[in-house]
Amino acid sequence: MTNPARSGGPGTPFLHEVRVLDVTGALAGPYCTTILCDLGARVTKIEPVSGDALRARRLGPERRPIPFDLVHRGKASLAVNLKSAEGVALVRALAARSDVLVENFRAGAMEELGLGYGELKDDCPDLVYCSLSGFGQFGPMRDAKGIDLIAQAYSGLMSVTGSTDGQLAKAGFPISDVGTGMWGAIGVLAALLRARSGGGGAYLDIALADAVAAWSLWEVADYTATGVEPGPLGTAHRLAAPYQAFTCSDGATLVIGAVDRAWLSLCAVLGVDLGGDARFATEYERFVHREHLAEILQERFVAAPRDHWMALLREAGVPCGPVNGIADVVADKHFAARGLFVHDEERFGQPTIVNTPIVSDGAPRASGPAPALGRDTTTVLAELGYDQDTITAMADAGIVGVHAPAGARR
Image 1 (cartoon, one colour):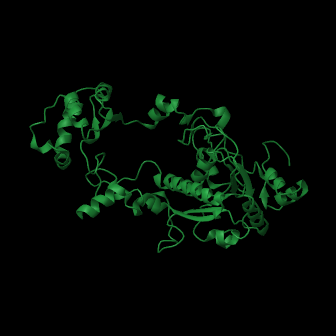
Image 2 (spheres, rainbow, N blue to C red):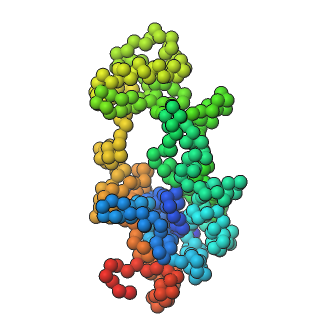
Image 3 (cartoon, helix red, strand yellow):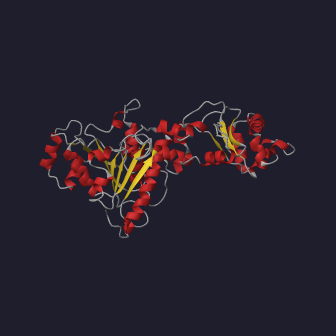
């Protein structure tokens, strides 16, 4: 591990001295290492000689591997056959030179390959080893298949997501995957601090089901206080009202959160006098009678278009916002100002890149395109001391894959 003498300064990437070995697939693991990459780490992606499975998931008229490109940008690609002893030895050698290893194989698979934390820690005492899986490395559900949909259901999220008539829905974004990737990155950063202060390496066990269940703060509090299981509320809040979506005269939708002092401002903007109605006299009463309150407010909102109401509400200090579609979000001027979406196909090979949302002089964010399969195999092996003849022989034997540009002959 690189010893952190104080180096760099303002503008230096936070993780510019950190080497990450990415032995992941699907979404949760790659998203974790993408965050680290955007923060400046040098990430080497290990993938099969045949290529990561996401490379085959091609979208759009040009059939680009968009999912792969979005979560492997800025990384190096080393194509290696982990079913071969030579390939495993190669990854062990790379782990010895790395600060972090992230993997999301099924529980126990890395140990079977001889690449588990127990097999590596003696040679890599400062290594931060992060395992991401559906249900974690121990517990009754350890060996169960865990994917985003299952994690949303198992964690209780799906039971409180959807319409009030009981029609369940999963979250529109794959939040089990991306949330697990975020928890993984948080754990890695914390463990790196300890390792770099002389406390040694660490093993991190991050599970999709845990990641989502850990967000159930409101719902667990509601259940333990009342003994009644929470259910889906549509767009409404579990403890406050009015706090939900309303449709306006132009068919567009906005959301408001008019609690505390904003309640009186909302009434003034909408021109409704509810001061004498006992059902809405206090915040608690407004919550209890939230369905009746929503009906009254909806009658007013449908009298004018969304932009009309949002201008008045914002001027009055009432929290509100539009319900945007993805097309709206990608074109949004505020997000553009903050650099959240990067529209630079020449640089990234994709029309739009979704950036890591950490804005700082030490966070370079998205830095380059996803690599071609095996693009960096020769470079990485050369750094390990392999000569060109050996690399060629390993490629011929199917131990590694070496990228050859279209039309080139190896």
